Image (cartoon, rainbow, N blue to C red; front, side, top):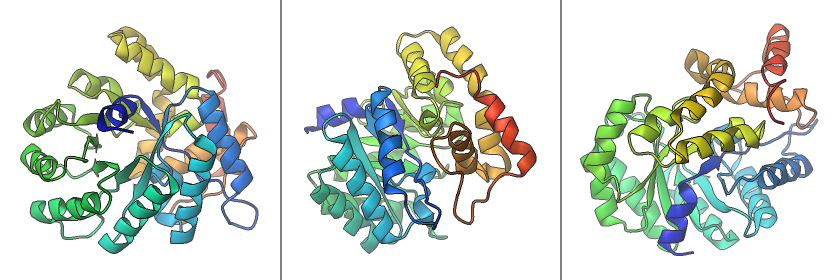
Length: 300
C-alpha cells in the first residue's frame, strides 16, 4: 500500500489485541484467532499485534513472531496491520524485517525503555528502524513528554516512511503544541491513550485513537469514532461516560492492571482466559465481579 492508503488506515480505531494464554501458559493460537476475527467482524479496520495490551514485553521473540504471523494470516486484506516492534535496536530492526516479510504494511515502534534516552539518540534509533524497512510505514510510540515537536519533525525529514505518531503523553494541551511544532499535516496523529483521552486529543488534531477496550466491545469504540468524526462531541462524551469507570480502573496505579482488566472482562464473557504474565497480576476476587458488572450493559 502507498503512504496515502497507510495514512488513511491510521485515522481510525487502532485495535491492540490481547494475547490469550492457554492452561499451560503458552500463546493460545485458536483463541487468538477467534478474538481477532471478532474484532474484524465487529468492524475494526486497523490492528496492532504485539502492542502493550498484547503484553509485548512479556512475550518471547518467538511468541512475538507467532502473533505477527497469526495476525497477518487471518487478517488478509480486511484491515491494516501495524506490528509492534521494540527492545534493543538489533531486535527491533529484525522484528520490523520479519513483519515486512510476513506481509505487514506498517510497524509501530515502542517507546525505548533504555534509562538514558537523548533526543538525538531517539532520532537515531527510529531512523535505523525506518531505514531497515523503507517499504513500510513507521509509527513511533511517544510516551516521553520531553520529546518535542522539533525532534519529531527532524525524524520526519530524515525518514519519509515515518507517517504517523502514536502520542501517549496525558496532556492534551502539550499534545496540541507538539503536533503543530512537528507538523499537524505531516503525520497522522493517533491518540495513544485510548478512549478516555480521545475526545480531548481529537479536538487538538488527532484523527485516530488506539484501543484495548475494543477487545471487549468493538461497537463501543467505533461509536466513539463515529461521533468524533461527525464533530458530535456530546455523543462522544456519552460514550466516554459509559466507559470511564472501566478505563480508570485500567489506568489506576500507573496502569498496573491495564491488561488484567481487559482480560478479566473477556473471561467474564467466556471469550478468553483471564491469565496474564508477570509483572502483571490477576485481579483480587472482589474486583472481578465489578469488572463483569461494568461491561454488562455494553453492546457486546
